[in-house]
Length: 82
Image (cartoon, rainbow, N blue to C red; front, top):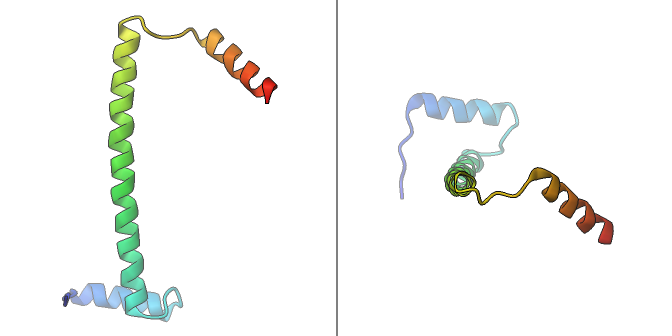
């Protein structure tokens, strides 16, 4: 696959190489793709978390929550038993 970069993108990559941040354009592009993959995983995590919060809010609205003091007590006992 061949990819054409805009002149400003090439200049940016070259400036990063000149500063010693990367050894080559391939290394810079590889890092860019890694960051893009990380961003995709983060966006997925955000969406998953948002859905879990919506479920939790609905449960609380139905009165299915647990009192905070009870949760803290359970956690303390859990940590004390380990």
